Image (tube, rainbow, N blue to C red):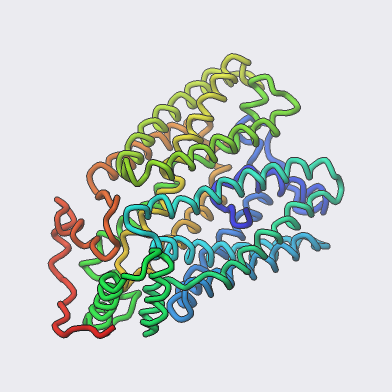
Length: 474
């Protein structure tokens, strides 16, 4: 719940308007035009602070993870969330609210850097997709609870705006305590030379005593990494841009970029208006929260249950097509229904609700969670930490850009913005079809074979890590 930066546009929008009314400052009302009524600079700054803090903190989180491990980074994330929640709930002026957003953003940077990597390292290869998508299920649950809390708090004027900040303390404390109790991943322990502890952790994770083969493979891989000339001479950041890591870098940067180009945030802003047009009237915001939140949760659970059976590529391809069609339908509905009208006719409003739910279902089953899953799988061990930092930072950078420009784009492009996103969905489908290999069931240490056998990426795999000749002691 506490780090629901992903897909929280509606939540930020309503909370920012509320804060404007409470503090009576920075009021920059948008136009009453259907497309421009959300164009508000206060909201853009409110959202952007979160993104900028997350972007910058992700690189710090990478260093913390490499030096102290994933669980230490999770504890740091929890502490950032606690401080941000307390500052927001106790705010006496708008500057304290902004500072609260900065701390919450740092929490997002730390948690999104550490948690996906940790889950991918402890999960068995055949169940890795399901385990990692539990992270997205948690996000969907948190988003639903956060939006519902914000809606109900709106009835407690003038102090109710503090509730959304205050309740975040609970999951923040849970995350902090959990980080203290969790076992570090075996690979992180091996990287620190703690082979005996790594064996014990592996035995607990796999539920058996015989883990010597897996342990030996992990130790051998770590030794290969440390003997790599590229890694020894340049470190992780420069190793990341080496030619033989080009496939992982391109896909790792493309996934968060494409996640934002789905247009999902633009759809979220219209949620309450669409439900109002469908006849929900005064309860439109509540029904929008309940219905879209339920769709998001169900879709994420469904994705988690099938991702290791169906694979990543089919889900991305199918849902890209569904979302492309849905975006075109939304553009047609808004282009025809709002021409010279203040609101959509009820029949079109009902149709738009169905299309909106379709987009939520498709996004939450595909680009929403898989944009985190795929990058966390593909980076080799020697650059996993810094690679994930790049993914998180680019994701936050894109969110920052969208926070600054999306509402203005919506105002300028009107219904054409959905055709714009539809075109990008077509590009995303083609990118998936030709450039993203299937990672289902492939151990992280064996991912190199995917690139060596890929029709395009194999040209970058001529530079390899030299083999280790000596036997590695346990």
